[in-house]
Picture 1 (cartoon, helix red, strand yellow):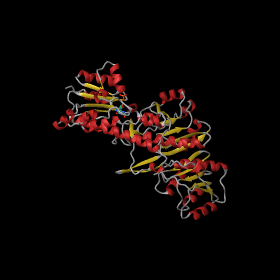
Picture 2 (tube, rainbow, N blue to C red):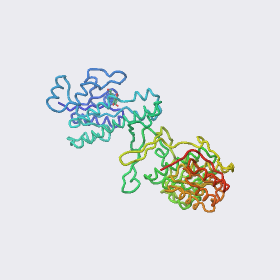
Picture 3 (cartoon, protein in one colour):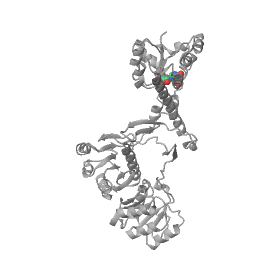
Picture 4 (cartoon, rainbow, N blue to C red):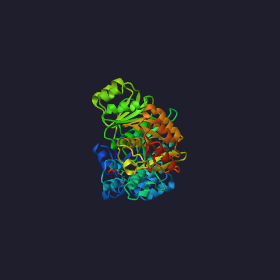
Length: 510
Ligand SMILES: NC(=O)c1ncn([C@@H]2O[C@H](COP(=O)(O)O)[C@@H](O)[C@H]2O)c1NC=O
């Protein structure tokens, strides 16, 4: 008796050629409605599944293949007992199952209404895939057109059948994770954000040469149906993105967007190793870039730069003397792009994509697990800053404090930022003590500390940072407050003539 293949696919890529090749090798092909029609129209001999089950497809396709004639044919062990039971019912074995599922993720991604999304939850497809994968000793299971050629071999070795079965279960488990994420994400119940069991629906969207170091394999994944500014950026010029480029570009763009939402001018953020190293606001992108670069000409070398407005020719040319890894912008004018392509062929130039359906979760690896929290998205407008000194900040100091606060939020703890007139003049980031972070920031600023403001992402345990800042010429300080010695810290600020503002909220970033 001819071997039988059941083909039921939503993505019909390559299916006609595949089915034709199977029939040429003596297989009988069974198919569901749309697949049947596609094969028949292409002149491939095919049997309708409804002729095998003796039932028409019903409930708008909700029930097509859910029948013992199908699942018995797939699941029967290839031994006498099971085969006899099959033949008593007039059923026959099915030796190959080729199924890919209703496009659930794609339906969510295009913003389809809920009833359409629900209708795109495939039931019969996963059931067949799981049955075939369980019985992979006797049944080949194909969920990816890339594997069709494997099935055309005369004899598929057992280890290859097992690989296909594992791939099949991964396919259905990812599919279920996407459904779970959609249902949880559209549920009113907030606690489901951190449920008892959490399935991360990740699928690879880019391969990179290696991870953080050349001896570490690495890849880039999309979470569910989310779209991300860097994940979905267009790389319009330069080399392929590396693992570290992705991480730094994401950090730079995130801070750039936060500042763009609160500042009037064009924003430029330079990032090095996930920390901001120069941040500026100015009337246009060229000046913002020059100010951010000049904030720390040493660290920006080999950095990743994000700007909030289109990069024009003047801005591109101003980047002439600086080696940069990545530039991210909402747009790049054609003349600027041509200039980059000619003068800086290695620079990766990205036009940022949208941010859509981004998870609220922040996931960090632990050995054997993950630490999961909600992202730190608290904006300035959510705070009730309280001036605790006799001296009030001036309007310019308020503006700089707000700018410095956004910046310090994106720096690794312990972090201290000095800023003046919309530019960072000194940053101390990733320090293991607060006073060291402050010393670094003040040292970087040098003379530019005079008249600057200081922001710290966490409170001051002692008055040492205030004394250091005042000695360097800083005039206003912003910090969360809440330390045991707050009264001493505030007294020192008053004694030294500083303004001090408490935010009541900290921004650790470890
Ligand atoms: N309900 C069923 O019995 C059933 N059997 C197969 N499917 C799916 O129907 C799709 C193919 O449909 P068609 O051949 O009509 O284009 C495949 O994605 C397959 O996974 C089903 N649909 C959904 O559950």
